[in-house]
Amino acid sequence: MSKILAFGASSSNNSINKKLASFVANKIAPQEAILIDLNDYEMPIYSDDRKRIDGIPEKAYEFKNLIKDSDGIVISLAEHNGSYTAAFKNIYDWISVIEEIVWNYKPILLLSASNGSRGGKSVMNAALSRFSQQSKHEIPNFSLPKFEENFSDKEGITNKKLICLLEEQIKIFLQQIT
Image 1 (cartoon, rainbow, N blue to C red):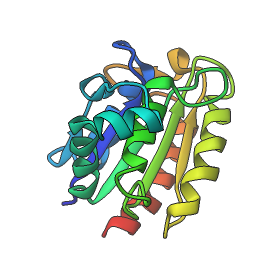
Image 2: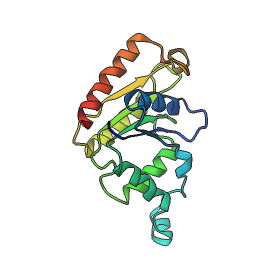
Image 3: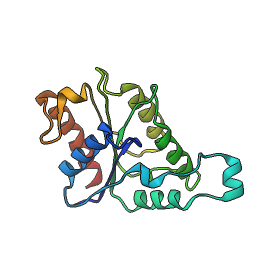
Image 4: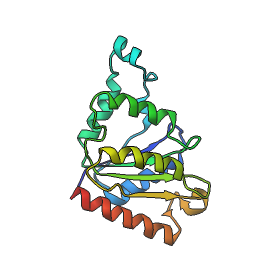
């Protein structure tokens, strides 16, 4: 089985995107899922001056090594004002100066969830546009709208149509990592 790195791109302790990332990673590779919390990789706000004066934080290297050691990455994007959360963007900025190819050409499954009817589509579109520039693969993706109506902590995604759409995207992702 493949080693899957998974995380919700949020620093919230009760993040619905952490729940979605965990659900999907355990569905894909229950024994090989490496679930991480962005709070464990909190770093100073990225700036060229800070990088020049203090260097790249060790936590950025730790995060980058998790990417390198994985066979695929599952990211569930939280949306703040139509874009990435500050926590995710800061980590992304730091790891992008370690190596230009941020995700090391690893297959990525992008997810997003929100309590609204669009399911985080704005952040999903931004991520697909950016990440596809450094990918050798099509990036499968899935947005879960109305999270509280369509997700249960016990069952996961409860809407049959949505679970079918997710399973189609998981299938594409699994073909890329095997």
